[in-house]
Image (cartoon, rainbow, N blue to C red; front, top):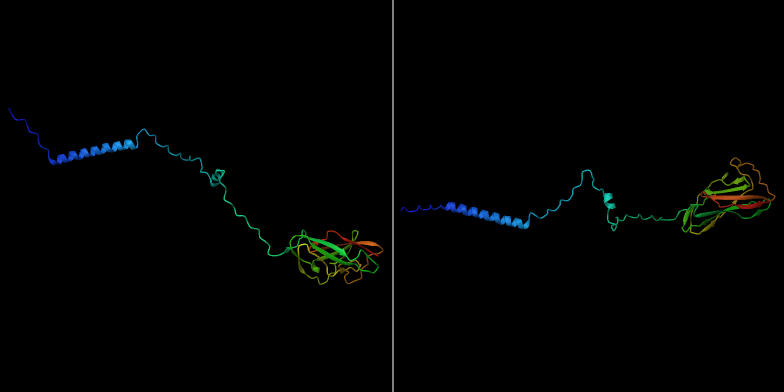
Length: 222
């Protein structure tokens, strides 16, 4: 009886390749187990956020602000600070009352009327205005007939800027004399007719700085 054939002994290189293959297979098995635990195939993947349709434009800044929560408030806007005048402002018709004055209600024959202006600052603030003769105007009428204007033959008009305090009342310091004649720019140096007397009534109206008197002052000439 013959001896059984002996198994051929493998070389060390073959053993090393076998151990390497076994090690790689073990790593693959471990990796597969870890993946199955961390990300099982039955877990539903999160739905991706919808992207905007090309036909739908992105909201503008104004539409976004409109859709804001009711509790949100718009940024406060700066409120301009009103400027305060550094001094008295110019008097206006709304702040000044102008009155026509005569020193008498009746004048005897040959007596000339003395005419004046009274100003009252009816506002709560001081104001300035020109009260010189260049800004004054006196007119005497009888009915619809204009007898005399102070500006027809005015000579050397002057300016005088004054400040009227709130509530202040001022009157012409020097009354203007009417010589009882009819005025016109063409008869300043010539003879002029006299206004009738005998109880005729005349009315004085004035203005200063373009602000007219509220009414007239009436007087009688004898």
